[in-house]
Length: 524
Length: 101
Ligand SMILES: [Zn+2]
Image (tube, rainbow over all chains, first blue to last red; front, side, top):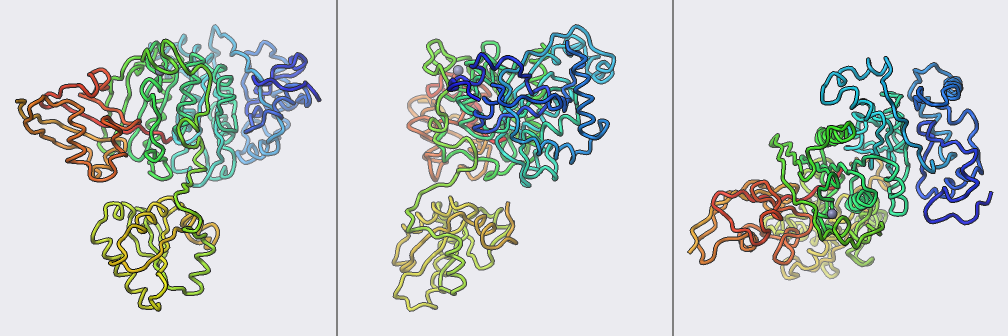
């Protein structure tokens, strides 16, 4: 199957690849980039596995205007037959089809440009009539939308509403990037994914939902994280990029890739009850690095899992992002270049902040840039591009116990204090009944009333012991990060007041307790 | 001798959590020999408003990376950054950038 060693640049390096292989994106979301799936991709591109006639024909790419109309029609007919329905596919069946094909198809080496269009069909005129009569858009704007491709980085709280409105409005092609699978805690804000999609890749789930909304749009799901080695090649294939990601390294990666590829970036973010929106690298305006030349210290960054977020807030920001994308794509132009729109949901207030212009000394878009290719952004930011590895290691192993070890201590009725240091709002959600609750913040502030409660509880427990050995204080939080910080504080408490104690944290926190010890304990 | 300066100091994007969760603060800076600038305001905030963990807000004599400073709703870069001379009734907003989605 050899095409020889693959080049660093990607898959289209073999002369033999070009012939015979039909890009599988035509089949909608059959084209898929698996995480770290370059091998599969290369095999597909090299013709190691030729798609059969039926495969690309799962066909909902809606290419009625395809220059090869007869083949398109044949393929779509085959697809309808293969699906055993006449277009109104039950959503579960559709998903099952996708599941069967998972991992079997390669990555589209290069997406062909969307065809230029000179007129709308009668069906399109009817479908888009409410926006066609807007003089700011009109037929000309609609035709531009149909030729536009948008890369959506992140199919979560922002990406779902963004992609939904872009698909409904009739953009030509949507690339959908997400490394994650749908989880129950996503459903509150990631409104394209239904209950039945839990456990399925988000990129694929989004494509399936969007296809039901507008089958004329081409959807290209990429199941995998955007990575420095592939980001530039991907971004170059799209006209506009929407950053709907949830972490700092990805924000720098997307921004740098957009500068290097010369693409406008519509960037949204949301947390708690606030949101922010900006358009970068557009018509001479600043890029993300112009604003933020240095990344924030990792311990100052809060994600949605820890800080919380309301779905209506991500929805508002995602819709605003969609609006700016539509304005850019249709030729109206964005009014937000050089501005940041900030939304405070509690106050019901928007602010439009005037930003600095492009910086001549910017590391990537400046006059003599030092960043000329994509870097290791996780190292640059000191944090992970996925939120799966947030575990801190502040304490030596001897100062930590597993949930299993703690369960054994509990069963053996060993005298101890269990200290829960989560914020009050989380303790209200669920708690272990025997735990003493003192938020980490109160410990950090050395709150006297809280320390007194701790001292009292330690005194009570000590009456059950011989008072010779130090009393163990086990500290627990949600995931085992804050508990380590609390242990460090407890280790500095004066022994004359608190007596002899030894503080340890419970690794993985209450979520580990829920998954490994007590499955009835709520996860959140 | 510069007259006292009254400001509205605001925090957002989570930065308010370092200030008891309060977003809007009416601040009156006392008389002092030199005019008040942002550099001095940051020192004053550290001494008078920021009780714990100043490293989550400040770095050196400036704000930490990831906090945008806005003076009367404009990026402080446009206004002279640390050297901006505060005027009575100015609005100074410190916004922590959000990354969630
Ligand atoms: Zn720049």
